[in-house]
Image (cartoon, rainbow, N blue to C red; front, side):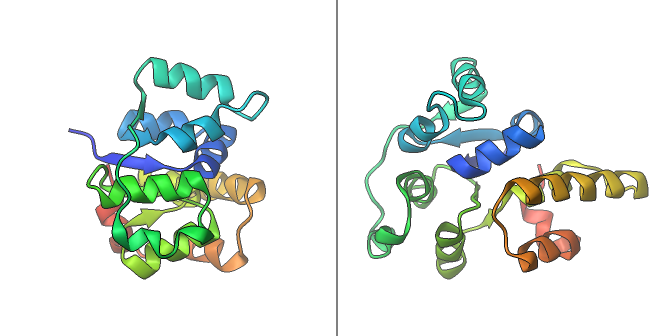
Length: 171
C-alpha cells in the first residue's frame, strides 16, 4: 500500500514544471483539497490541464473539505486557502505527511510537529542512493530551486540532510 501524501498548489506546480509530479504519483497516493485543486487548475497555470486529467484518472485524489482542526484555526491568517486545507486534511487524519513549499505553511508544520517535506526533497526520496543517481538528484534539486522561492539554507539542508531524517518519508 502506498503512503498517502497531501500536496499544496505551489509544490504541485514546482514538481510539474520539473518533471517530478508523475514520479511522485507513481510512488505515493497523492491527494489535495478542493481549494488547492482550484488553485492548481486555473487556466494558463503550468500543469492546469494535467492536474485535471490526473484527478479524472484518480492519480491525484481530490479529498472533500473537512471540519477545521482547532489548533490550525489560531494561525489561519498566515496560510493561504490551499495550504490551510492541506494541513487541515492532515490534522484530520487524511495523509501520512504533507508536501508544502510556502514559508508560512512550512513554519506552521515545524511549530506543530506536522511531518512535511518540500518539493526540493522529492528527487532524493524517489531516487536510489548510487553515486550516479546522486549527481542527477542534485541537478534535479537545483532545477526545482531555480523555479521556486527558497532561501539558500533550505537548498543546503535539502542537499545535505542525513538519510535518516528522510526515512519516514520514503515510499
